[in-house]
Length: 411
Image: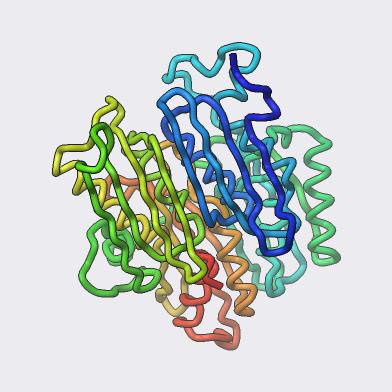
């Protein structure tokens, strides 16, 4: 017997402003469930300030204390959380227990193409905000400014609701864009993108950039691409529990911290039997994780311990890579994040980049988003060429600092 479908995910909204809402998840377990849940929470713009997780390997119970936007769509959040819970697919049939090699069909990619009569500060962020509210995921973007000042935007997007092939959904999307773009919008159309179109947007990354930004080693000193001096302590203890390896983490809090831990463990096929996460008011985090390998045993191999600890330190110290560089005579903002082994990128990165640049009154001349295999890892890379016009309104250091703060939730 399972539990009632509506009891799988329970959300208790905050009673007073400033207090956290509480999300409770009670469902069958699967490796990587914590990562999938944290990713959905992050996608809705919420921050986890406390988390407890417990499982016996078959059934799990997780509680998240979250804070975020007052206009959060809690009903939709619950629906999206249910979709990643095994019980959501096994309430009537036992579909969840299908062979693991039966991967879901990749979502269709659509091309959203529109012309604007002129550019303005924050235009790209306003469009990104609309697409986020409509649950349209941006896969790639090409933005270019014509000599006469007109702006061409090409967004390669997927629809979380899988309805963008319908006329009603397309009309809804165009209607929302018209409302935010106003008289600047000249034309707008949506069509299914062909495989040859989606495959041709890869760009070349100079070797100097790849060596500096995507270095997987932890250097002894600050260098370009580091988000901030941020000590991270990761320790292993195999004496505390007879059946589990205890990992303890001390670090500074940032947006998506719990997600970064969970996605790393998911990529290593490590299962959490019990976990506790707490962030205090000063922005410091304490994490205790009782872990097992996929075979149900402790992590006793020193090499595996060192590899896991090093990866956790790196992912918490540099969850995204950031640099402001010269691209010929122009200035380019580069942001990169690792892609999960499941193929999913980090949520809201482009949204946060455009928000930061809008706040800094810095216009965007062109954008390229692509994926690159570097050092045997896949990375999602955002290349934003800034519109300098009569000169940048703020210094390069201010741009790097401003984008970093928004990406990390330190603004």
